[in-house]
Amino acid sequence: MSDFWQALASYAFMQNALLAGLLASLACGVVGTFVVARRISYLAGAIAHSVLAGLGAARYLQVVNGWQWADPLGGALVAGVLAALIMGLVSLKAREREDTIIGAIWAVGMALGILFMAATPGYGTDLMGYLFGNILMVSPGDLWAMAALDLVVLAVGLGLYRGLGAVCFDEEFARVRGLNVELYFLLLLVLTALTVVLLATVVGIVMVIALLTLPAAIAGRLAGRLWQIMGLAVVISAVFTTAGLGLSYGPDLPAGAFIIVLAGAVYILASLWGWLRGRGRA
Image (cartoon, rainbow, N blue to C red; front, side, top):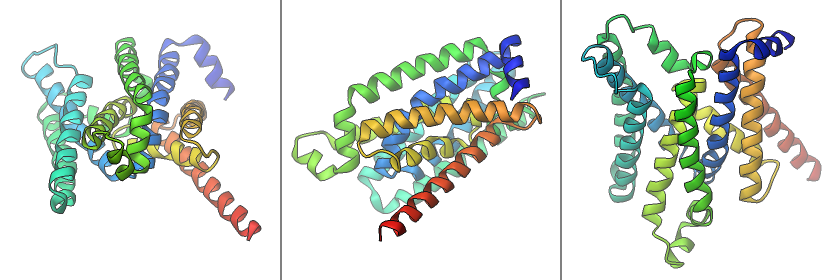
């Protein structure tokens, strides 16, 4: 870790990487808590993989057509929000076809992204960065975009905290209270899409669902109230991204994969500890 701290003090790209991890952790803790409480990890996974289509399309338009305004982060945002709305509406209006549409969007989004990347001259290697994360290559422009998305996610998520919490825990009670459950559900999926775009920069599309759900799941074993779980999930996510970045720097391992392995190991230990504590009480 000493090499990491020295590099952090000396190199701007390391500082950008650390800041990217912290920015992603804010949205991850807030939205991940709602996702785990509502049990929509499968929807979040489909949104995450559909993002690749937007990334690939934006990169293709940038390189082949010369459309410099077609930013990959913007393409990912459009694809993620569109996929979230489609799956949300199908989930609400046509439940018998929910699994089919989710699987189709998951697979087609990945396939389109791969095709766009393959058709983009000289950018085939970018696919690995999108799939498995490229946190060391985060630019100042990416950080500003991540900060803007963070503000939107935090403003909406915390501003509508009570309504989203009611919909996540007791949908029927929320409906009786007069809340527009369908609108809140679609809003939660859009927030999930925004968070997926943030996390994809850190750990990549393939592993984004783990960082979105594991910190909240761990926090749920340590706290009882939703706001406590949310705050603790933000801290845990920040610890995972910082520790993963630091521990992977010395042996020159992929930071995104290391972050997920670390999160998975802690989750297993937390689950084992909860099981042992339950047996002790019994």
